[in-house]
Amino acid sequence: MAKLKFQTPTGMHDILPEDQLYYQKVFDTAKKLFDYYGYSRIETPILESTDLFVRSVGENTDIVEKEMYSFKTKGGDMVVLRPEGTAPVMRAYFQNGMVSMPQPVKLWYYGPFFRYERPQAGRYRQFHQFGAEVIGDSDPLFDMQTIVILYNILEDLKIKNLIVRINSIGDETCRGEYKKALSKFLRNKKNDLCRDCQKRSKTNILRVLDCKEPKCREIISQAPQTMDYLCESCKNHLKEVLEYLEELKIPYILDPFLVRGLDYYTKTVFEVETQDNEGGRQESLAGGGRYDILGKAIAGEAVPACGMAVGVERIVQKMRDNNVDVSTKRSAEVFLAQIGPIAKKRGMVIMEEFRRANMKVAECFNKDSLKYQLAKANKLGINNVVIIGQKEAIQNIAIIRNMETGKQSEIPQEDIVKEIKKRIKEEN
Ligand code: HAM
Image 1 (cartoon, rainbow, N blue to C red):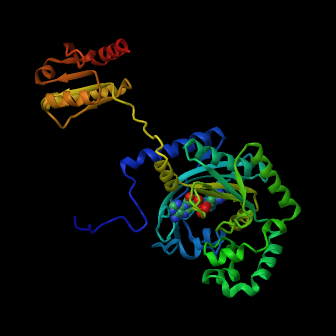
Image 2: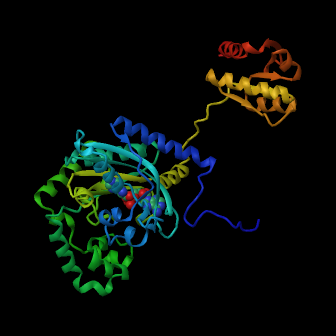
Image 3: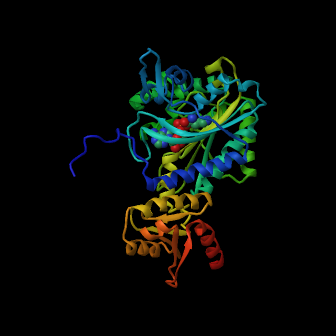
């Protein structure tokens, strides 16, 4: 076929009927666990003010520098297709007066996000995330619970060999000292860093630690570690989170070079991946952390908070790789066969009666051949077939055929649902 003139934009994809079962399973599993842990669902707009992300995610991050779908509206406002969910949820928290609700406020979300990235496996320009934020409490228990919920959802989705990478990047008190030490360490190595890192070492030095380039990784492996520069409070916070994780038997690796690509984090940062890759690090399935300074950036009021987000496309790919069973289809209990236009109309009415009785019906309203329809019922393994032809439609009756015995009987149309229910009960 010739290339179609209109295709999805680069890095974006249709979620087809055969994909929907996976997406639905991810949504349902996430919802079930968030309900259990007392989270309420929130939806924020797809468009937000560009400045919200510049202030929160950070001016010198990849997301803000390179990846935002930002544009001017007809009214002259700069808006952006949201690249992530944490800043919008924090905005909503302040805007909707959640500050005066009992704290912490626990919120979860699901929806599309947009980043103008170079598309590759597991990396899209429109993708879905579900995520959760706990706003208003600084207790390390919530860092732990965020990780536990995330881990449990992925386990329920049958994602195997999960491992949590975790680190602490300190807070405003201790991070400065660490940055100074890192800057000193990199001073005479700058020429050996990749071009991006040469720039990062001036604008956002922590991001050098996150670089995937082999030559930078080699230098970084010798760099000072955030952990050695944590103040007493940050050190204790990390220690408590790790103790909780051990208590709950969540497998983790302490990764001293994990910093994450967003500026709002303080203390705990983590990512989740699977360990089944053959060598090297793979794309993370999920990420998150504590972000006690985000409230200040957005509303001028510091509020302790932590959260996480999961990349749905990456999870769906893992579920496919693991042949996870996603079928939820309830099989039909009765087949409705019709012959001719009057019977078809009557069939529609009877279908509604079955729906009201919460019974699932199979049909082939686009086919008039009885032979075809009976073969279809047979193929679906449905034993009771309701047949309505021209004569039956006029006389307000229906034929019920037992496919196993071939026996047919006539009944008044108003008794169809009752009769089928009775037969199914007798059969079981
Ligand atoms: P993030 O690490 O940027 O964190 O994204 C979270 C997850 O979204 C990633 O681990 C990945 O699975 C998925 N993801 C990100 N970019 C793409 C992409 N281009 N294509 C496909 N999947 C992608 C955040 O977004 C933070 N808001 C998480 C958070 C919540 N931190 C605290 N609370």
